Length: 251
Image (cartoon, rainbow, N blue to C red; front, side):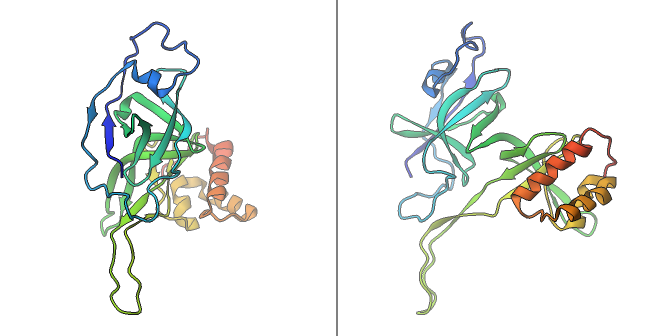
């Protein structure tokens, strides 16, 4: 893997009076208006791409993207790619890969047809006494924005090479493999998105409190399976349209 470098991105809103009036800017233009801090340190544990099968990226190509900054109306246009293994957005310049950091200045990144937001999200762990809640942080692709927002978490896992145990087995090279995506919802009163623990109808509808019977009827009449992304999006949009602005009881 080409040496990944990090860039500390700090937006200087006061740098120039016409900063917000420009119609578009390339990432190089943007860099002239920010303080840069470059480091040769690689992300700990990042494997080399040499002789590795698969890819950590959603797309190997750097795709036209838009970076939306907090308190700025117009985005900055840049060619980016998303590394789902390291959970980083990269851009290429001067023979090196750079990673956008200091996400507190960025509202969202339009990439791959989604708005990616960097946020904390939670996942419940089971247990005899109600379990605990893990809090994580990373980029979530927002599929639906509304009273109930829906997010998708992309991830890629790295597997080390494995030798053949017997003559009947083939050795396996080091490889990146895409993981099954995780989906999160965030209702109006939720401080952060939370991982959907189960798509089994009863368990899933527990997220919507006293509306479970009405929503169950909709699922049955529409004959949709919630494990399919398109159907999940359809369900969340229906909820937002019919019940999103109404007071709900907490589950």
